[in-house]
Length: 317
Image (cartoon, rainbow, N blue to C red; front, side, top):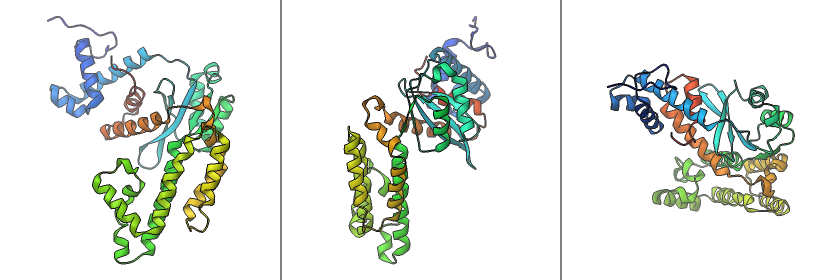
């Protein structure tokens, strides 16, 4: 049977285009090891087919200039080795993976590759409260508004709540401790995401410990900040929330409130109609990247990881 040579699979000319596409699609939901076993192929051949397939996906997607970007970092190896991921939040796709760390210089690499003309068309940059990212953006895209995203702010609040949980565990003894032990994720999860047993455990924990109950209620209430359409009303809500901390002996929450105060302009920017973006996409992408990293565990090919991330939100071909 005459086999079709693929223009984009120059290194692997002995597979039909249909088969190469099918292997690439299978690797979107399975590991290289599983796909190799299923089709009786060498793992290196599967990886090469998928790599070429992903490059073709990227080529077809093009590189239009983004108007709204999301900036985040991921840890790629133990020992705090970071890379930066930049996403086009309007088109809902990652567009850049790179840098050597979380530095200003590393993010400058994205803007330099993007080019001055496209960089100056960015109107909004969504990021966490990491100063090097903000400095790079203000230098390379000075016209862009800065928005600190809800996902990272709530993560700081959850970390504060967990510190309170740990301090209560250290303070208590005997049977009063047993309700707290092993309940970190029960306490930090949204109530609607808990199983029936999880909700029962949460209720028992909050009933048994007044301080944790207060901290939990305050954590749940804080999420209402992003419901306000007016910065003035959002500010009033935050001031009331901060005032409610008085006499509660919740030092981690007091530190969190001071952090919010310092970064208020970037947080409150969400109230402006032109800054309404699908922040859920950022959290969804972070979850997808974690899945990609788990499936790619043991593969030290950074170019492969880059392609997996950049094509993770693109349609199959």
